[in-house]
Length: 573
Image (tube, rainbow, N blue to C red; front, side):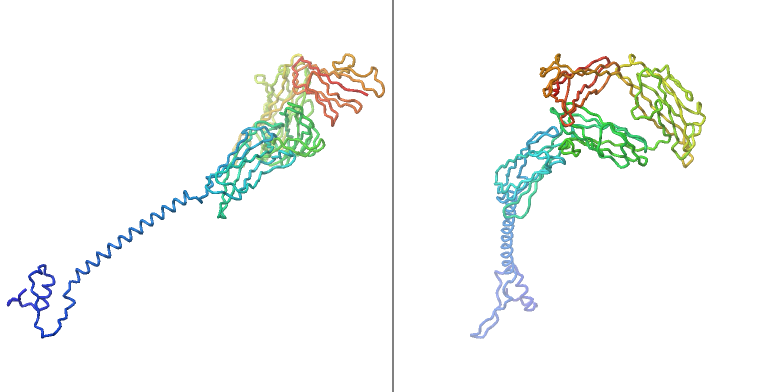
């Protein structure tokens, strides 16, 4: 670019114009005069550094993008490979890949031998080592090979199980429980994997339901009782087995505060040895005692039935069933007691066609006065002649057969002070035997009510009731005879008997019911040492206990006017 005469810019200004000029084709480079032979040194600022910077920058950015892309792809590949190895790798082990199957009955009879089949399958891709399996059994379980030996659990070390291998084990045990009870059988399975110290554990559970028991026990008692008053417990033991059960024992666990006073069966502490039970046989134990405690306290009675190892041992060797009964102690505000014909009995019995004398005593047990106290006795049953009811210090309400004692007949009941007591009485006739029905009954329901004043001096209505049952005697006649020539069994031996020669006799028992219906009747006899039971019987359920030498005839129920007869054979030397 030629210099203009009017261009007054400095050399630096003209250089700057050339540097930023977009038209470089017609630019004439100004070359100053040089001396001959002198070398020209170019200035570094004559080059275009901006273009060089753009070229190098584009080259570095493109390489970084390529490197980052390759690294990202490598990362994704690594994650994919790791995930595959984790979930599908050849060395992965999971408890979900081990299956435990239990095959066996779902319902059993108590005391039966239960056979369970355990099948373990390893679906892992590698073998598992140190394999152990354990099954816990309920309390009371016995060994299938020795019924007297406890069998709390089954434990076995199975060693190693290869991939895809199946192992089967058979487990047998004798289980006991109450009818309808569900027994849980927890299973624990543990193992280790190759190259690992970790222990893998898998748990499972199986259950069986008890359908029946060879021996069952039921407890019948009051749900509530008063502290210090007699308490009756009726225990019913029944054999559900198809064969005789020997050395039957029932063991009671009495709560604190209970003191036994009497029992219908001989006992040793809280144990009852009942001997041999025939199939379907039922026995009842009546246990009477007193229970003391505080108001609203609950006491639990527990009774277990089973068999002993010997005929003289009262310790349970095998327990078939355990039954409980809960009794709540309550404090009555007016205590009552009924006596029949001058006697106080838990299970009173009266005779037919007789006048019965009833006395009712009452006492205020509260620390405060009870006002307008009323004591009533409601009579019910088919053995009472309701037209014969009489009372001297009470009122008989014939509309509902109730004898009422109140302040109208006894002024002292208008205000019954703490500890105060009184007596009411009445009489009635029982129907004759010929007029009694199949199930004659007499029941007294004694009720008390009144008003007491609490600490806040606010009147409070109180009431309580208690029911008592009375049995009516029946007329049952028993006859027995010993026959030889007319015996229904094969006859052996001379008549009259000779010394050291056995002669057989048929013992015939006959029962005639001339009164009301009889339930659970039985006849028994003890044979002397020189008489032998030959096991020949007819006409009834007759059993023989070799230990006590007792012959028993389980008659069962006898309807009015019915008769029963049974025979058995003995040999006399």
